[in-house]
Length: 145
Image (cartoon, rainbow, N blue to C red; front, side, top):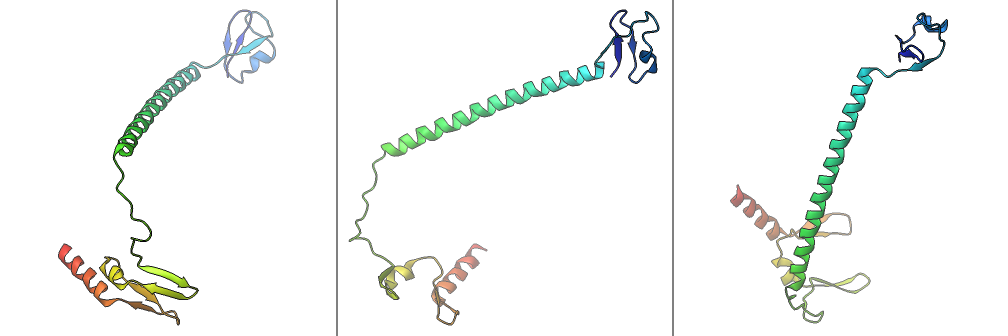
């Protein structure tokens, strides 16, 4: 950084050996560091960027608040709608019911009505596929293409 004589105000470049023996104009030996004008411009640019950043953050905060308000109003409207009656455990049909350790009851009608692929794992690590579910998925894929 350049140096400025505190008495006469003469500016000397950074690393100038003249300042070691004192100011050649007035003989004074006290100097101050002086910021370059380019550094001043960099500081101004940095301040402008910080202001833009703060503006952006405030606008983002506003957007988040708007989204939160929209979600809150949507949740209130959902809460106001009557909830459909839920089936009790006695009325609900289960696909698989566990009777005990290693003992299951399967409801084949509900399992076969599903769109998922029906698979089973056998004892030796092989899988058994329900062929009608495989073929029905292939037909659906061909219809889409």
